[in-house]
Image 1 (cartoon, rainbow, N blue to C red):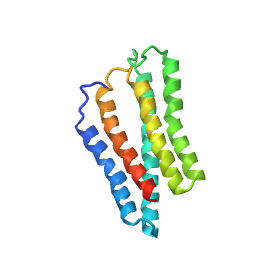
Image 2: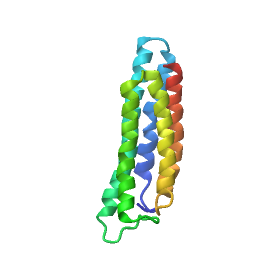
Image 3: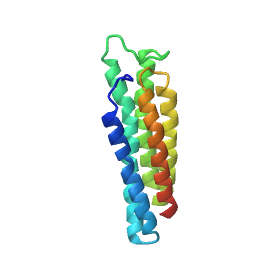
Image 4: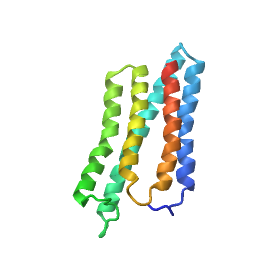
Length: 160
């Protein structure tokens, strides 16, 4: 991925991905204390699980793509084996953390934990992707999306 990568669809789909976080947060707040409010909070939880898994999968895609290149450009001081290990292991970590939280916690607690997981994924992505060339635009978008998603989830958790 280079900075010349067209960002139109990345931006449109990324920002559109905030609509469920915020729409469901507003619906949860409006219907606070009702069965409908609890249902909206649970639906936002399910959406967050999907997004967390998607964010981890970015690292799998990067490792798979780069491992097929004759002269990989991703190393950032790592050997190919180190890079692939980090990418594949981290790639499954967010979804496993999210699943554990969802499987063993009530909805309100899970929403708070997912808010933290989104922040953790952002921190790790900053550390892992910033040294690589070509991720400036993606990371800038991720800054906005992570703020929007975590605020939407926190609002949902508050009213759940």
